[in-house]
Image (cartoon, rainbow, N blue to C red; front, side, top):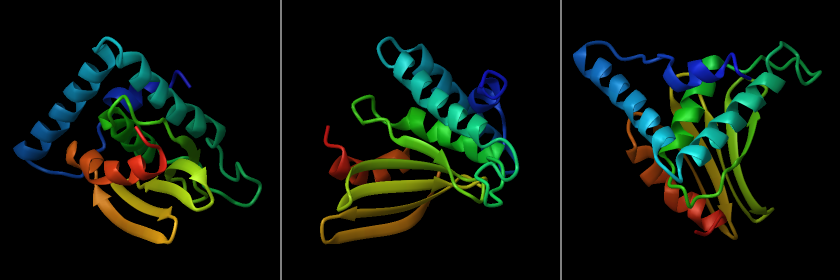
Length: 162
């Protein structure tokens, strides 16, 4: 776990090019550092990131599930950690796992009829699906700014009320 933690906190895996991409990457790193240093929320942010790192460590070898799964993708691990630091402190921490393709999965589960999950790709895409009684939702968002948590936050709230 400890060998992945610095990468999740500071590693760069941006696909952007140019000064704007560098500025966004730097801003994301500063936000993560601020979240970890903020009294009251720093410990929560660190525990969320640690959950991602622990899941990645359990899925660090090829065929970790006995069915040919790929190891956890380090870029997915980093993006998942970044996303979790963007969530407000009053949101429940999701169950964290690794999908057979190596993407990190985040799941908020209340019952078979109330759940929301996000699969974090190595490109920083958040593929999501949710079930809220008879209502269903699915889609894809880019983890480019804190806006992603504001877009997906209402779905998380429907499963894990504040």
